[in-house]
View 1 (cartoon, rainbow, N blue to C red):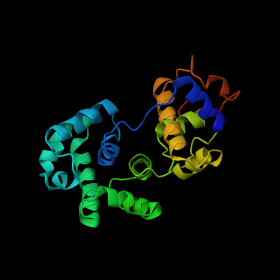
View 2: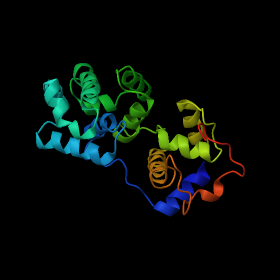
View 3: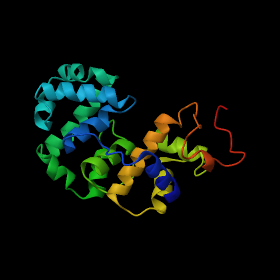
Length: 218
């Protein structure tokens, strides 16, 4: 995995991800970014900020319909409003609205607490741990899985934790490294490793295996 990391970093440079001003903004964004582009998430977060509500207790007290309208730009806004409220409930009712105290909790305990929240899966929980709490937890997303499977590094049916273990096995357990690698895989996935791959000029093109296995549906 180290070879993939170095190639991507040399090609694209540091990504400075996650684009947020506060850890709480990262948490909100981690929920809202499910199944949508970051541009739409940014619009939704900007509306929350402009309303003076980018704070856990204030946002939790907001009427659910008003919250849904605020985040409308991110798509699936009613569903995501419910998921966001579930996360806010954890922050407010279990940690007294203190985001710093929540993120300072034992990482294993915090991950379990996040995964117990309805609507938060491993990717969202690990995004919060890595980008908001600054814990060395690698985030696996659709791009990560697709890039590695197409390059013969993992099976196409590999599960979340299998992919996570593969990515971290040859890398130093380091927040900055995990941050950069995840962001770089998103970058190459967005620009090249799409549903219909654009392999020309991809920095990983020559790492494709000869006679690579066909993807499901090909």
